[in-house]
Image 1 (cartoon, rainbow, N blue to C red):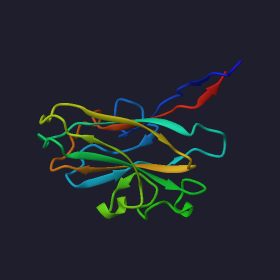
Image 2: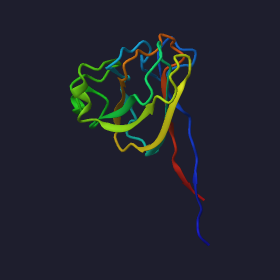
Image 3: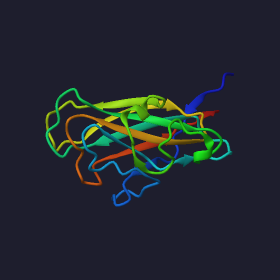
Image 4: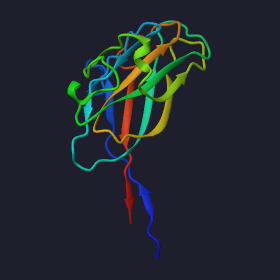
Amino acid sequence: MANLIYKNSETTLWFVPAAAAQAEDYAFEMHNIAASAGRQSAAVDLGTDAVAGWYEWRAFVQFATTPVLGETVDFYLKSMGSSASATAHPDNDDGTGSAALSAEDKLKNLHYLGSIVVDEAAADVEMVASGFVYIPYRGFNVVMFNNTADALTNDVDENGFMLTPVPTEVQ
């Protein structure tokens, strides 16, 4: 008899501002990000234990002013070597802490996850995108870039990122 392989989601990791109503797992100060600016989360260290390789990601933003249809807010994964420290040779030299992206060129060596595409010209609407990603790295940061002409809202509960481990389970 053949075995069945099931998807078995684990506890979601939240990347949100420290002041958000949702408790943060990793600081990601995405609120009030200016047009053509970016931010990276605090570093994640998955450690040396066995962990899921596949993750579902979900990003959500809201704009402070009316955005332009078709513009994007882009998300990337910044990997590190043997740990979540600067000595683990991260994919750019913006450090490993929650910090502003120093330049758009710092995205060039990162792993593209996906984009929220502005689908409505309204400032009071939450816009969301999601996807599935394989993460073989021990350490990483989530990085976002506001590739629009409008700033994100200053409301800390309207901008964030979720990462849910989805290990496969053989039965």
